[in-house]
Every structure is written in structure tokens, then in C-alpha cells.
Image (cartoon, rainbow, N blue to C red; front, side, top):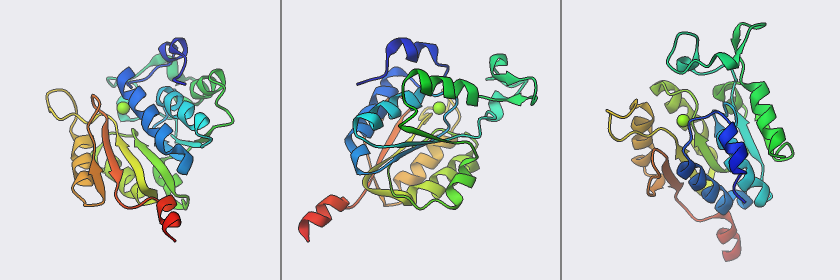
Length: 215
Ligand code: MG
């Protein structure tokens, strides 16, 4: 079942409703074949969609974020939100809000928050993944590091998703689009249709299940 619309309305975030429905559908399709992972949890909006699909497919969602906000969410920047400022640490801290979102959605037994940078989480990773959603820092080297750090873990048939893919440079920053194109052209993925700014690639190759069924 899709997340509760009232809860979705309450949670801060930049994911459109159609984009959310698409990632829910894709995660529901492949979640039963392995855990999903998202980079850039923020306050948990995409987590609601992915978590709901993982719960339904008896999967798990790893949700990676240092919760200190991206460059553009720092004081004085375009997306700074004073409600997310922690006066004690004098930093952005989205973790309490994220935890509240997960608790309200009843997803604490489905979502595993990894409170660290994507690079740290990737360093010792070894688990095959059915879906990777890249929506962390939007600097080109950050998006590329997320792509290179995680795409190897995708199972055949697994989905690699990029958020904020702006084909038209007048509508938004080009870093996710640049890395999305690099991934699309690297020969390991099939390109599926986009939903708004959500880029969807599928890892080529036979699924493990099909290989097993041939043996
Ligand atoms: Mg985004």
C-alpha cells in the first residue's frame, strides 16, 4: 500500500508524488530479491515510499544520510530550513525528524538508518541490492562517487535510480543528469522511461532466480 497521504503531506522533502509512486512500484517489483538502499534520507519522504514497498515485499531498506544537510541546506544557502537547525551542535540535524517519520509510518522494523556519509557506508559494503536510489549531495563528484560506490552491488534486473535529473539546464543543476548519462552509456544498464526528474536504469543480465532455475 502507498504511504498515508496525510503523513506524506506532513513530511518535508523534494520528491514529487508521481516520482514517489514510481519508486514505490519499482521497489515492490524487485524488493523480494534483495534489500533496497537509498542515499539521502533527509526527513524521510522517499523513505516512506521505499519503506512501504519493502514492508510489502518482506525486504529491508538501508537509508544512508549523515543528517547534517547538503551544501545547499546550510545557513545562508537557498534550501536552509531553520526548523532543522540544532542550536546545541550548531549544525543541521535532520535525524530526529527522520526518526519521527519512520516511527509514525510504523517502519522501524523495515528501515535501517545508516547515519554516516555514503562513502563511509560503501567502504565495507558487501550485500547485493535490488534497488539503489541516488539522491544525496548534488555536486558532480558526489553523485559520481555514489554511482561508482554502489552500482556494483546491484543484482541483475535491479534498479538504479537518480533523482533531480534535469534534462533542461534551465530547470535545474546538471550534475545528476551528467552522471545519469554516464551510467546509461556504460553498457551495464538498460534505460527505462523517466518520471518527472526520476531517472530509471535497470541492471542487465539474468536474475539469480532464473539462473538457478536453469541449473
Ligand atoms: Mg532530490
